[in-house]
Length: 424
Image (cartoon, rainbow, N blue to C red; front, side):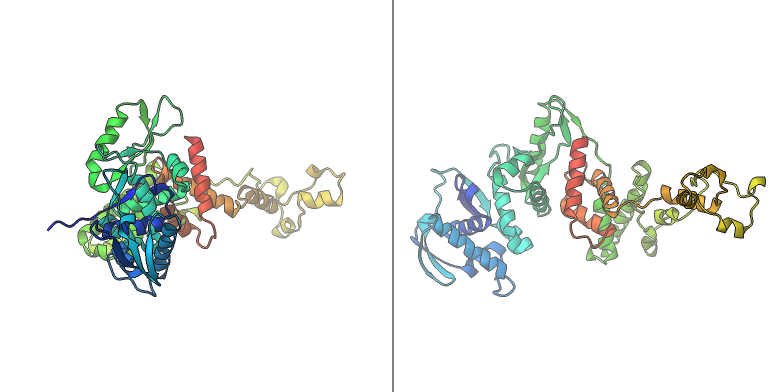
């Protein structure tokens, strides 16, 4: 028996649909049969086909509300004809949700793809589905891929740049989308990055082939890329510390241990004193031999021979042979100036302890917290986002770990990205 899993939507209508309207229309199209004029459906029915499970009136309130919005929008725009309705039950004219694929340009989405999105994301899936349908609608049916810049996606589909990045990575995680990232810039168009190539994940090999063929037709140069993804390793390391079931397998533990060593070693070629080494002692109980790395934080609290304490001011010279009591009672220059502004300050004996302390405070004047966070964020983006459009959610996890309790992590991401884009 052959099961039909394809859903269709008109290409000329799809861009103006909301995510809720797209989801409902696709399921109605999937359920309709040409031989029936009427299609009986319910909210629960639509919810089942979206998620692949029976939905619950309490835990799935947002999903149910969004499905209702989808019906209302389609009815208002007269894209479907609702013949009768009783609360959450609908009788729909089956012909109004039928697409003649010989007559119209259409986009095909498989029911498994829809269910993969909603079973993972719940009500959040409506916007992700809309974005997915938009991308699938651009794909060339021969090459199974398409070149499109993220700026064009923002302009044509009314998404923000951050949202485009977020949805791209989410669809890649779900293995619904594959992105060929050339990590290259055109030599004939300064500051022009070569666009990525997109397609369904199952067509991965064809997408890579198309991307390589496209690069062979234009002048380009490769952009810098870090050899390891520190953020990815740090996240997996944290999952390991939180007893992720994945690491019940000793092979996975050994693989993570090797990646953590690479993480620590990477600071030799790409140093950053604001990020500490990973503690590898957690792998000892598994019988692994591990190198030892001294914490950078402990080093910051040590006074080294190279520490600059300003100009030397000896307390043991013949002219400065003072007792401790005399030294502590001595004024500093600002005290003398306040008392007599006409005085020659160079003629007064100086308190060497106070002088040294003032110089040290000036050198180590505290950097404002906001500036310190932004400097860290800039370094973080350079390490993990150069040429890869660092995923905002991963960036925020790393930043929040270093500076917990902030209200707006996104602004540091935006500022770091702007700085990076201006510098390349």
